[in-house]
Length: 326
Picture 1 (cartoon, one colour):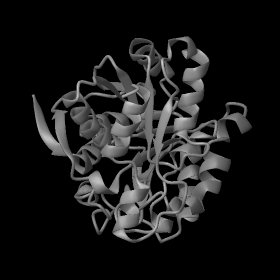
Picture 2 (tube, one colour):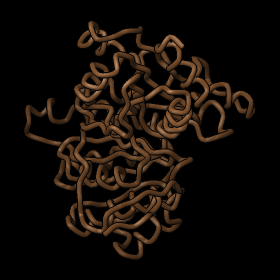
Picture 3 (cartoon, one colour):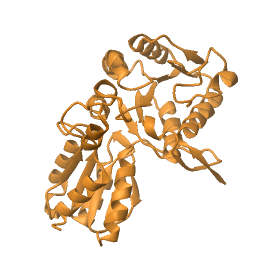
């Protein structure tokens, strides 16, 4: 049996199930307890688990991220929620210099099983300091695992896997899509970290994306189908470790690749994928790889600027027609 639930409910169910299963798991962050979470992801969790396991923190990301890292090194499994990953830049010292390096610095003596989570990317008129994506920043750091999804089924299965993982995991969510609904089983399940999902099979072009850009790609793929272009759509779900094999197999079938990535174009996830495909599947390509990214500027406040800045279905369709020579 299954139900239709929202992304926020799927995340809450995943965290709650793991907290019931393992008493070392706890949640901490700004407004996660008394206020039920800034986006209501942790609604009701304080009532069930109490203030020792659902903990409101001060507005001090570096401080409470450090407390989480210390707790993880000493046998607990913290979930650290950032109200937005934009604020987590303050905590990158703890994430990158401590959590990611604990295992190697201690020669395997100490692990750091911690989950950092929160929304990433643009969310309307939030302007330059609140509209950034950090998957490529964090994905550049050995020792971290990066997951990024919007499908409620994936979100619940991945957050459970992340909580059980013995390495530090960063989960990138979407502020705009916490209300997105999907089918989630009643029974327990896990979604493995490191496996992409083929959302739609196709023959003419492979389109790769992740997080809320999957909604853009889905719309574009439907329109392309009407014009006789069959797109295979791949949802990465995990940024690091990245599932290269699924992408390579698809490109060997379709012979064309478009990568849609909300982050800035320079040194991003789309650049990495383009490099890997030209290295491993060059002889199968019938056209150069094309990327669709956000503009290489800081995002302005005006609605017209937001529209021009972000990838959209029209830009994806244009890119697909470019690689298909249509």
